Each structure stands twice: as structure tokens, then as C-alpha cells.
Image 1: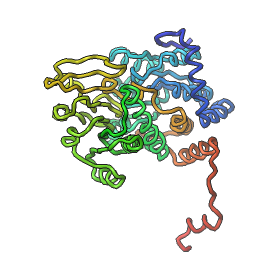
Image 2 (image 1 turned 90 degrees about the horizontal axis):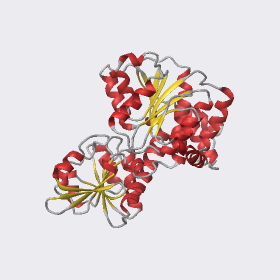
Image 3 (image 1 turned 90 degrees about the vertical axis):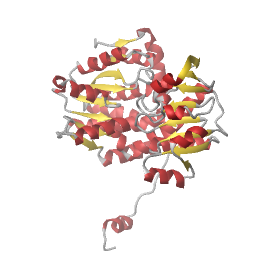
Image 4 (image 1 turned 60 degrees about the vertical axis):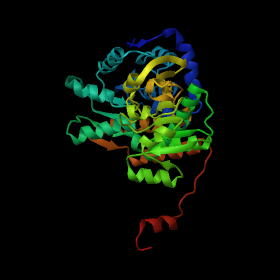
Length: 414
């Protein structure tokens, strides 16, 4: 029996039922699982993964194990771990190391546990596994390649590669067109506001929502907030993205000005200290602070605590109230952690069907590759295949080029 560490093994049956529910909305992974089960492309492949332990991730794990992979899974965020899902996967023979709310020491121990399996391939969500591998060079032996799912993780990998520090070939799954459209824009846009509304119970219509960062995730959040009747302000450091936000109809301001106007603040930058002490000092009574970036550094929680004369923990599930010296109250959602997974259920299963199908096909591609260390794009054909399969699964038919059109597009003489 594969070693594991889960909170309550007796929850396995409940977890299995919820995984089955998610899989109803994940037809692309289902088709891949059928093929992998017949072809067994991963026989003998040991995989270590650091991912959110949710029903959707379980569907990916089942898809890879159907193809013969031996999976060892650690949670990438203690507040997103679903204990019943962890129990269900452990019961199926997956080496799961995940408990909801585990402390930092336990989190690190779980990462080391999956790497103790001596994987040939790593699946990362935020670059924590890759960082640990490079901090402990002996663990790198036998690791052939890896995949990174997040914007933040890919940024770290590119920095490591530029510094000559990256010792592995890593594929940037997050950088595909389909991933940015479906998962980042639509998935993050919907699930972030779902989390804020679940946590606060507020009416968003008529409020002012400040979105920090107008990449694909921030774009999606801003679109959904406006669709619910909010006035949207955007803060940006990138002139091109700021221009895009203006042309999309949003008002763009520096955070020093937006801080006085916002009712809800949502960070989605991948950077640290986006909301800081000088911003907290200007915010309205009752302002809501939430983070949609991967790590809990975008809202300076330590500075917020230092500015508070009193902290009322859990005035609602996932909401902490910080009382300022002038009696203003600032409401921090999910401790500043990734809000859509800490205070809600993350992306809908239909979104993760696309994202994880890209990952599964990328794993299959990697098995047959010998690559030098560096950051690689997902082969373009994988993105097209997943998009085509998803459209077919939901009954959408697209046009095909005529021979004359193909000739026109492929010849400058036309």
C-alpha cells in the first residue's frame, strides 16, 4: 500500500461521490482516460505533484493513473484541500499527502514526502516542488522534466532560467492560449467573485470594485464584476494593459487614489505588497480585501495587522475584521490567500476539464522527449486538440477551410 497522510480516511466514500459529480462536466479528460487505459503510455512512470487537492484534480490524477502512472500528490494550498477527496484518492492507491489547514512545517513535510518517491516527472502549481528540488540537489537525480500550471510559477521558472539556475526542462502549461482564455479569464473571473460573495454575502451591484492587475485573470474579474453591476477601477503598472483596460471601458487609477474609492479590492498581479499600509490608511469603513494571486503576499497582511487595534477573527466564515484606530473596519477574506479556492471551490469542473486535458497531453508528450534544462511552451497541436475536443463535447461545430482558402492562406502569390 502506498504511503499517505490524510485527515480522515473514513471520508473516502463521500469524496468518491463528489469526484464522480465533477467528472460529469469533464468529458475531455474522460476521453483521454479511455485512451490512456488502452495504450498505457505511463507504465512505470513515477509522478510527484503539488496541486490543489480538489475533485477536479482528482479527475486528472485518475486519468494519469489509468495510463499506468504512479502518483504521489501533495497539496499546494492548505486552505484549498478537500479532505474527503484526499481520502478517496488514498483509498485508490494514490500517495496523497494533504490535510486541510495544515501548518507550514507540515506543508513542507508533505512536499518532501512526494519527492521521496523519486519521481521522473513533477507537476507543480506555484513552483514549490521545483524550488525544493533545487534547494536539495540530491533530489534532482532521476527527475527528467516537469510541468508548471500557474502564472506565478512560470514567472519564477523564467527567472531561474535567466539566472542559469534551472536544472530541469519545464513546460509552461499556463501560457497556452486556451489556458489563458478558459482558466485564467473565465475560470478566475467567475470563481473569484463567487468566493467574495459567498464569504461576505454582499450585493455587488452599485459598489466600486478595484481590480489590481489587468492580465488574463484581472481582465476576467473586472468583466464579471461589471456584469454584476459594479463600477470597476483598475490599477496597473504595464502601460499596454492599462490601455486595454481603458479601451474596455474601465477607469484606471494608481492604487493611492483608488484606495479612497473602493468598496472591494481584489489583487491579481503575481507580485507582493500590492495593498500596503498607506492604502489601508485611506480605505473606507467596511472595505473588503481579497487576493486572487497564487501566493498570500499581494495583500500585506502583516502591515494590516500592525495597523489594527483589534482583530475580530471570523466575523463570518473566511472573513476577519480588522479594527483601525479611527474605528474603520477592514474585512480580509481568506487570510489573504488565494480566495477562489480558500473561500469557495475554485474553477468550475468544466474549466478544469480544459486545463487538465492540456496537462495530461503534455505529460504524454514529455514521456518521449529528451530536453535540455529550460522553459518550454506546450506544443501548439495540444492546444488545438483540446479546444476541438471540448467544442465537440458541448455540441459546437466549427467551419472548415475550403481547399481554395487553404491555398490562399499558404501562398503569398495568391
